[in-house]
Image 1 (cartoon, rainbow, N blue to C red):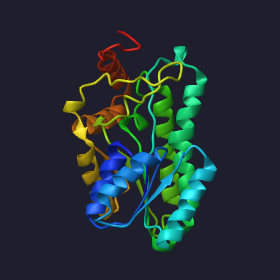
Image 2 (image 1 turned 30 degrees about the horizontal axis):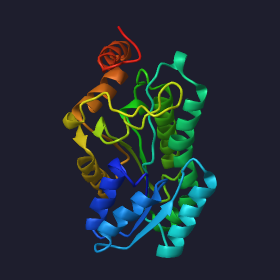
Image 3 (image 1 turned 180 degrees about the horizontal axis):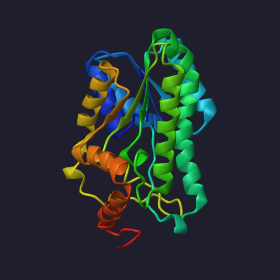
Length: 263
């Protein structure tokens, strides 16, 4: 099982959960030190391969897949979890920020899936894309983030149809707001890290709980999972009453501390 972005948040929680279940893990992240610390803590439970990987670099993704196959002989599950967020109005945004988000979120998913696909087809395995409610309804102040998550959803939905009769399982997995460091690392208008979260992380679903839902989705080979009541409601309302949902989203996000936009 390959998990990208495994050094923190949902990726780390998923690694811990699946290690406890005995899954052999291939963990990828840019921080090899954090991966090795994680692996040391889980080494008594399963076999773990750690690979320093920048998913925005095609060669890194190819190497990750090759090393995984060399170690374990096959790939059953690929979880494309590595991701980056942002927070700024598009009018103020340096375009390099959107490019960075597309490179990490979208192209990272495409690169890893491309090189893992032959092995996943052999095992009739699973490919997962961790997106967001922002991949169903545009999130103000997050143009690059929403764009990348919409793109991942379109890519994976199409891949599922292409392999409808090949036994490939494709899961589009959309957590709602999750307690993690994604908002701390989110990029601002000039590309610098935000450094702090504008939200109360204590009121959010934990990364561990998200990992449990992911496990259920893999077992049941679901094609789509949208988590949290507000997430499900947002997607439903966006489909039924898009104009109303736009106004409600604007009001909701404008209440964030230091919001880049105001009502």
